[in-house]
Length: 365
Image (cartoon, rainbow, N blue to C red; front, top):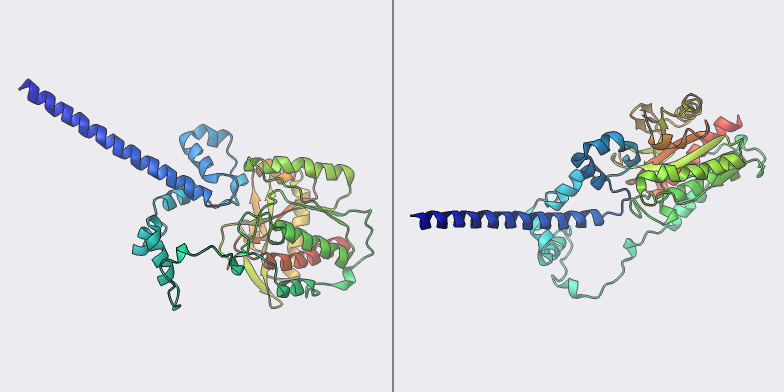
């Protein structure tokens, strides 16, 4: 009898041990899949990791976490979990195809709307670079940018004095990209840097306003320190040019649907604009005079150009911005967002010409 009881206990322990092993294996598989999901995105900042840390150590969230530093990140912990579990692609072919490449190939071909399916074994064919996978500015887009914008007002142009720098344009998140090249890119033509180029050129050549466009990369690791890295860049220009009238940190947003962040003016598709402010800046009141002034001009001349922000047309405010978004450095510091990563770079660049007109109205009149 004692032997039987001992045998039952041994079997019970064996079952428990197997259960633990299975659970451990499943956890390892999930962890590997989660890492693959995170690595499949080029987004900087590690938002999912930070959120996981916040859940496991609440003191980190209350004492250190700065949500404003991650407002442009989309790869959240929830998104990683959903994709790691395969719940983002729930269909017969979708689920099987995500695990077995053979069926994924079938799914891709059968999903081709009306087109004749290629060989299921096409994955044995040599790799060929597809033209459509390379981001390029088309001749039509170049021609559209070179044309005089409908927003342009020649009566606002003054004689350019290159020694009297009035505007600084820089980028805290220098790699922020648009739809053609992805949310994070080094291709300036398809990032906020390219938008800054158009804005600077339009202000200088179109309105006689001297501009410096700084392209220093600030969004290296750790990403949440980007605003602290861009601070000395801005301060150095303030020291050199103390009479700067506008210091523009040029960004793009992420998250909202393209329909919300796109408008059509003069038959052109434009990325809508937002000003982002930090209420804890000591220069908040003076800065808001400039922001409200430009929003008012934009609404009068180009209704719809300004997006609908949390705090009204063209405005999204934070009580405590990351390092005050550098707005503590000068009343001239403003943060502007040109659409989102769902907008095209062309839409953002065309919007830059409209903002140039608004700025010229604000500064030159």
